[in-house]
View (cartoon, rainbow, N blue to C red):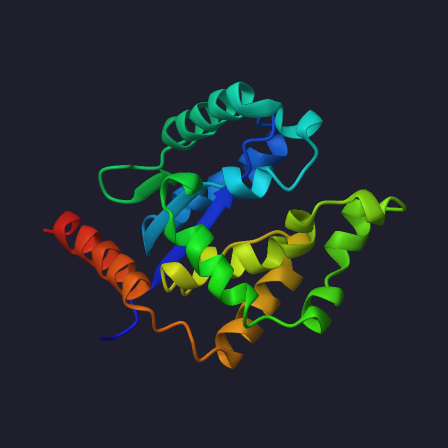
Length: 193
């Protein structure tokens, strides 16, 4: 099956959206709808890598997730033609992240400067999730066979790691993930009629 030009990107629901989110990401998401099949995700699992004071606990995370979803739609993302969803509602993200964790190498993760920057001097108390953030990001991208991933400067290293994992992995052929990709393809085909 040929690769479909597909965009995958997301926004963390870690508080109020700001002008930077809108201008730096969401405006571009709206433009990409015209030329690509798009999957826009509220990446609540990524939010959990931050201290609870950042994501606010379960009730606040749920509220912020709805708020980001509403902002996507209010900004012009068309959920009838493209997919807008909540990351934690698709078990494949966590499942594929686990498989990729068994393929990824500690040396690859040690190259990631974002962990060092976010953990700061208190690395011993940082979560494993923060350290492993790039592997979950790789799972997000590979699960949907995304061909275009609009990311900010701070995410470019993670994107490169996801490419390393994909190139070096021979275990990603699990039927379940192929089925998820097939369902995504079917969604876009049904919307284009």
